[in-house]
Amino acid sequence: MQQPGKRDLLNRVSLDLATLKNTFQDHLRGITIDINEKGNRNMAGLFLLIFVFVALMFVAARTFRKAQKKMILNHLKFKQAQQIGKIGSWEWNFQTGRLKWSREQYRLFGVDPKLFEPSYDQYLQFLDPIEQHRTKRLINDTIDGIAEFSLEHKITRADGSYLYVFEQGTVLFDEKTGKPSGMFGITQDISDRKRDAEALQQARRKFEDIVDHAADGIYQSTPQGKFIMVNPSMAAIFG
Image (cartoon, rainbow, N blue to C red):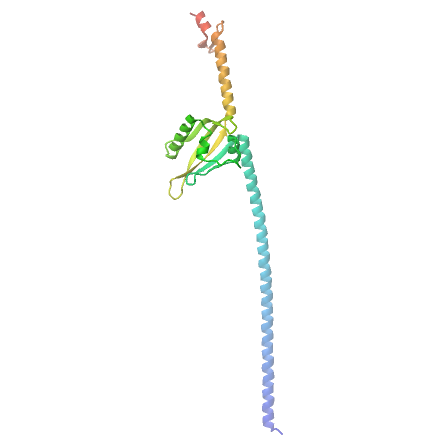
């Protein structure tokens, strides 16, 4: 039989252990609740971040599609504008020797982009020997900075037909060295204008021939009576 003092000690120890156990459980329960609340908040934050990320990706994709569509549309408009204006463009890289042509440039020279690889030497083959020499000299002077590449000449296309074209170009410079790195320019078909000018010149020569050989006197004068032009018959009448 235990003594009263020992029994009281055991009771106090048991009571202290029970109190400590309850305190620990309460503390553990509080920690668990706090962890769950923080976990819920973190999960909500994670879901929010995911939502924001998805929304931003959606907006970025939509913006990219719009920009891509606009770029394609602008490219198509540029190609159509070149076709309407009969203007081709070209870019020549001095370092690689590569010559890039637009689709309209290929059409002007009458070659297939899939079968023809443009180059400086190939370009010169579309010109007659005299025009080759003149063009090469002008290009060299343009690169040296003593002239501007701007000229009209006749090209013989791949099928043997010919066009009159106006070509203009500018020198491109390397950003680091400041030295010429290439040229960029345009080629425009001016055959219609040339034909119209030739037709006008022929009509003028024909008119002058008729006037010069007319039996009647023909003249042109100002409102004040000053003669501007008389034909030989009119000159003969006035002696």
